[in-house]
Length: 100
Image (cartoon, rainbow, N blue to C red):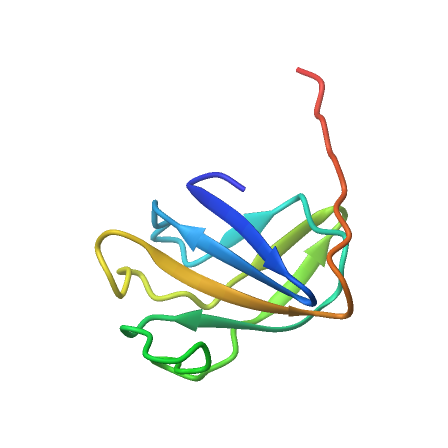
């Protein structure tokens, strides 16, 4: 994933995006899990479950790539934004190296 960080806890992963792609997609290659739900967290969080939009984001697989789409053209916050991924179980990583 370029432009951010990935952190995990149990069957959830959090993508902390510091750079926003105006095409409305994020691509993650390090997760092998199926994603049950992806949600953009965009409000000041008072509790871990408070979501700004509450809407689910479309998620699809293209080979080893996890593609999260449906993001707004402009980021909700200028500094960093978070997408919560609810996974099908504990985090399973995969490593992908592409030869030049």
